[in-house]
Image (tube, rainbow, N blue to C red):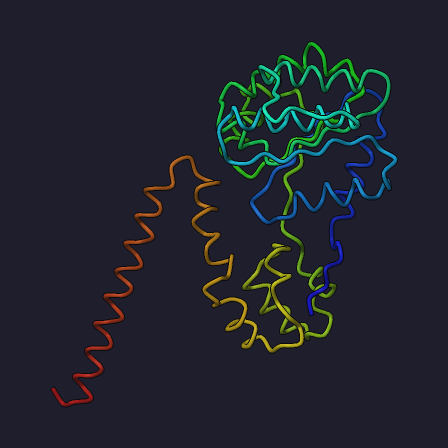
Amino acid sequence: MVSQDFVGRKREIDLLTRLNERQGAQFLILYGRRRIGKTHLVHHWVNTYEGKLPVLYWMATQTSTTRQLRSFSQALFRFRNPQSDIPPEFSYQTWETALMQAAQLAQRERFVLILDEFTYVMQADSEVPSIIQKVWDHHLQQSNIFLILTGSLAGIIQRAALDYRAPLYGRATARLKLQPLPFGALIRFLPQMSTEQRVAIYAMAGGIPAYIKRFDDSLTVRENMYERLLSPANVMLSDAVFLLGEQLNDPRNYMALIETIRLLYADASDAAGAGARCRRWGV
């Protein structure tokens, strides 16, 4: 079966460690397409400290900004008051207030705040990048925080942090675009396969860890293709639509183009099949 070990991210782990060991506030923007391993990376890095590093991890979901703020507020409250009960409707009034509360935790010692898939928050409220800019400039930058923002929505990351006029441009002390794993990493996932078989798997899965883990090196490439790749439940098939939405500002025109190509291909296949049948029947 496929290995579940953490593979091929030593340079990224080393970067996180170096940033954490630097003096003063650090701000990392970690981004990349879905299933590339952003969440797995930060969890693995945190686990290397074996509970000795104060860390608050929170993952955003695609919901309203009110629910997102309430969820984060409650996570922050539980971190600050682990023995206290929290009212189910408790929430800070604004993101600015919530982030300033987080800054207080980093006044004397290192405090790591991981906001995973935070582009969903920026998607729900376009003012959030400017709020982070303000809080960073006036509070967080003078603290001992290590702030890690991760996101999959390429367009939002670009507008919020990478463009020259973006609110967070120049605030991050490091930016990391997580890349697919190199081909050489597949030997750790699929040790029983030959090099030729791994080439075939890499052609299908690329260097996406979540995809590679779906393949089984006790099966042949053909068996893997039919059982793992062509299954109706295969996330690799459904991900295409999500990826277009994440990488493009308005994917509707692209989806329409793909659908047109599909229909043209289907028509051409039908026409070719009809021609073959006519020739076979002597028509």
